[in-house]
Image (cartoon, rainbow, N blue to C red; front, side, top):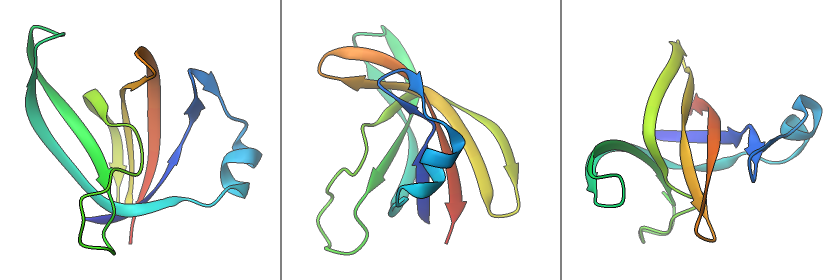
Length: 99
């Protein structure tokens, strides 16, 4: 599904709402699938945002692992999970709007 996403955290630190809304949202195709991640030793739900315009599966944001839906209302969704940046795992939450 085509969406726009605004991450709530940056390297594990919360971004103020005004700053989140000021920056442009990341737009692309959202997919949520189960993957076996050997580092976790189990199957986890993963969310990925890829480019929907160039036909190439370019990842636009770090993949979220161990994803949970916090809420879904109309065209708004909030997902929570973990992202890995430079080998370090951080908690992350995405505010998503279906477009």
